[in-house]
Length: 610
Ligand code: F6R
Image 1 (cartoon, rainbow, N blue to C red):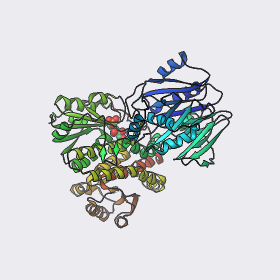
Image 2: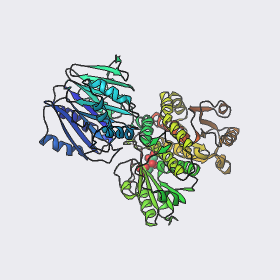
Image 3: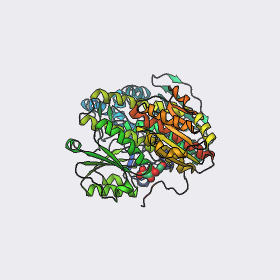
Image 4: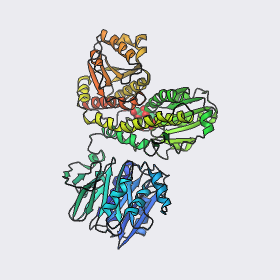
C-alpha cells in the first residue's frame, strides 16, 4: 500500500524520508520516490522496484543536506509500476511536487480539461492531475491553491505538497486516506503511518477527514476544506515499533478487519461512473466477442478465495444470467475439467502464489479457456499466467487468516458482474447506477458496524469454550456461513461446520443439542422465511442460535437467543457486510482463548506447495 512522508527541519530531508520509507516497506510497494527543495530548485529521484534502487540514486546524485522534502512508496492502481508513474508528481513548470495516497475518481475528466488548457502530463497516474490542478489555481498562496484544487476533486486522498516558492512550508490534506502530522522541536513530519516517523517524535496529530495542515519548521496550523482554522490536540504515542506496524491494534488480523471500508473504496475507486452507469475494469483482457461467447463461468480458488468465488456464483448467475460453477482449485486441476473456448475461468487468489490455483489456471488455459484473475498481490505469479486481471487493491495482508482480501474479492466480483451483465444486455443503466451508489455507501455501513463491537466480544466470551459450532445460511448467505466457519476453526481451533440451512434436516440435525451453538446468517431477505423455519427446528431441539440479522429485524429475536445486528443493505451486497461480525467473532474467541491470532498453528500465509 502507498506510503507518504514529508519532512521540514534541519536534518537532511532525504535521510529522514528514506529511513521512514524503509519503515513502511512491510506494507508493500512497487516503486518509490523522494523530492527535496535545494537552493530554490526541486530535485527529484524516483525508481521502480525496491528502495535499494532509490538508495543508489540518492547516494550518488542527490543534494545531501536539503530540506524540506517529501517521499512516497507506491502500490500501483492507475498505471503500471514504472519510474514515470512513481510519486512525487510535478506540474508543467517544475514548481511543485505532490505525493498522494488514495484514488482520484474523476481524474479522467479533470485530465481532459487540464490537457485542453495546455497542461502536459508525464505519467498515467491519477495523482499527476492534482499537481496540475494546484498549478492552475496557484496565485502565490499554496494553501489556497490546494483548497481550490480539491474543490474540483472527487475521491479519496492523503496528499502532501512541496512548492519551490515556499521553502518554509509543506501543505498536506486528507480525505478518507489516513495522514498524521508529527510534531518536533524546530522540525515537523508528515506521514501516512506513524511507523514512518515514530523514531523522531511521539507527539502526533491525527488529521480527520477533510482536514489539512500548513507545516512549518517552528509550528503547524490546521485548517478544514473551507479554509477555516482548526485547533487540534496532539496525542502522545506510547507504542513500540511492532505495535506501530499494527497501527495500535493488538493483532494484524484486527487491523485488517478495520481496514475493510478502505479496501472497498480502493477496489471500486476510479472504476465506476455513477453518472453513466458504467464500470471500467481496464486490465480485464476480455473483448466484447469474448464476453458474448462465454457460455459458462467456472470460479476456482482455495480456502477463503474459493468461498469468495461461491458468492460470485450467486452474483454472476443473478446479474449476468450465465451458469456458474465453483471448483476447488485442488480438485479442478486433476479431474480433466470440461472447459473450452466458450468457458471463462475466474481464478481468485490473495497471494497469487497458491500452487493449486496456479495449476488450475494452467489446466484451464491448456484446454482453451480464457482465464481471468481476481488477485491482490501485484506482480505475483498468477498475474503473469492469466489473460486478464481485476486487482482488488486490498494492500498487504499479514494476518494468516484472510479477511480484507475476502472483502476485496467480493467487491471486485460485484464490479465484474455489473460489467458483464451490462454488456450482455441483462442489466439496465439505472440498476448499475443504483448499485454503484449502494457500493459507495457500504464503507460507511461497515464503519458503523465496527464502531461498537462490544456485543460480538461479549458473545465470544460466552461461547469461547464451545467444542463445536454449526454455521447455517441459505442462498447467497451460504458461502458466508462457510467462510465464517473457516475463520473460527483456523484461528480458534474450534471445530466448525457450515451447512446450507435447508440441508440441515437431511443429517446434521442429529447433532443439535444444548451444547452445539448455531450461528445463522439471516442477513438478506431472499430465503429468509425458510431460514427462520430452520432455526425453529434448532430451537425445538434445545439448540442455541446466534443470528446475524438486519438491525431492523425485530422478529428474529423470537426465534434466536442472540442477535448480532448489522445495517441494512441490498441483498447482492449483503455478503460483504454479514461476514464482518463472523470475522470479529472468530478473532475475539481466538484472542480470549489466548491463541496466536496472526500465526495460527500449522498454517502458512501463502501455500506454494500442493
Ligand atoms: C483462510 C486462508 C486460506 C487462503 C487460501 C488461498 O483464511 O487464508 O484459506 O484463503 O490458502 O490463498 P490465496 O488467496 O492466497 O490463493
